Amino acid sequence: MDAPRTIPFTAGTDRPRITVPPGAVDCHHHVYDAAAPVAPGTRPHPAATLADHARLLARLGVGRHVLVQPSTYGFDNALHLAALREAGPARARMVAVVPPDAPAATLRAMGEAGVVGARANLVQGIPLGPADVAPLARRLAEAGWHLQLYAAPDLLASLADTLRDIPCDVVFDHFARLPLRGWDAHPAWRVVAGLMQAGRGWVKLSSPYALDQRDPFAVAPLARALVALAPERCVWGTNWPHPNAETVPDDAALLDALADWVPEEATRRAILVDNPARLYRFTP
Image (cartoon, rainbow, N blue to C red; front, side, top):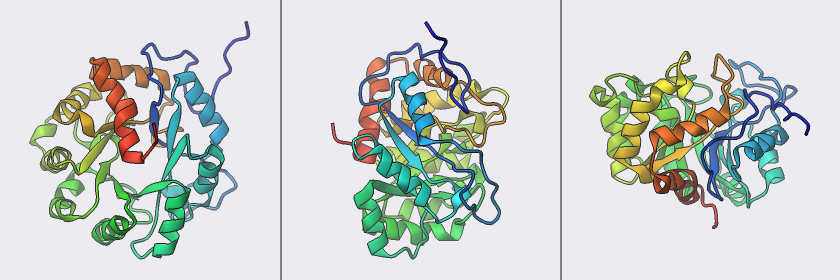
């Protein structure tokens, strides 16, 4: 038997040890084209193709995925929209990056293609900033989309009133960047927990190395706390090709971490299948 082929931007070749249920969704990944123009203030990323990601999903046993427009390409969603069309509506959805004054017709056309939300990366602050959150959320609510937010916890706390008042759901990237120690004492915890328990907030259990590059599994206590708080508001993603990782991780090992964070099989199924089906509007 031939040895398994390596896949770019992921370590290891083994399949995950846990059983992945049919309909599981990778709720956060990107694609990159080294030839595509990048937004001012960003750097190009080596090519990371939809085909390579498909090989990763096959290794993991995950059937569906959500493309997330990175800050690298600013408001130019062309690369990810092309990947969305290639993947097809049965397998893929997309989160775009759009300005607060995006024309309604543009959002409508993107929605028909499978876009269900828009992201504001406030860690980089490109191409959107904190002042854009409220007007962007109003625009997204008109389109029936959610707001995906990536921000440091202090900034999340400063946006508390804004986030409580916006008229659309909020999806917090990467464990909401909450601190690994004393998270429940940080003001951002009250913001995230309040929105989750109110049925308006979601958290992605993704990119644990964003919180600790040396030990991504140090996130376990925080992950368990978020799941215990509102398991119906948690989803999972790879963050492939891991643009913010100092060391390329083993995606199978990151998926297997769910067995530690979420020991109940029914809850894992909800996080992998049922919750993302609701959030991203996948049909059964």
